[in-house]
Image (cartoon, rainbow, N blue to C red):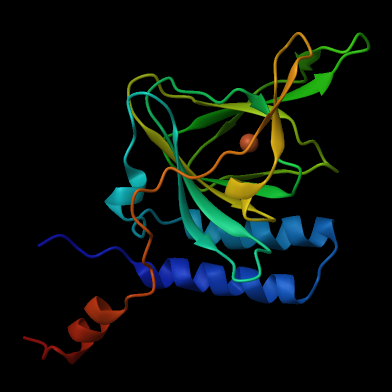
Length: 207
Ligand code: FE
């Protein structure tokens, strides 16, 4: 029998994020402490259900795993098919990216004097367990791609809003700006809160 996904790990992460936000930290503290929490979550690849780890041949998937009841943050599983990438885009809120499986490349972009967008600095390669941050304060425009051309990659994103409903922008290198709202890819709702499998396992007598 397959080992059930470790939902406790995810629920603990969500609860710790909520407690962190309860303290109304300034953004540098939030990004630092949130990165530690997300780093702990993605240090183990034993908690994400297969439903939210499934790639799609046409485009990368954004499965919402949790939206805070006050919409202070949300958690999204990004699943990249081989070679898939985002357009250049912004977020308008803080975001943390934790690599769970495979590898991804994040390339920052900056506006040029003549109103175009150009790659800024080297692309950063994220490996499992590593965490990166974005925000309007520290740099909010980037393009992300699967670093692997022959297998899916998965990163866990945490944003300071219900990101699927946030009005933001896609940019073309010629400076064109297009509004977009990402939505989510889910066809079923995530359920990390059904503890019956764990409780039943505890009730079962040990052999
Ligand atoms: Fe992004």
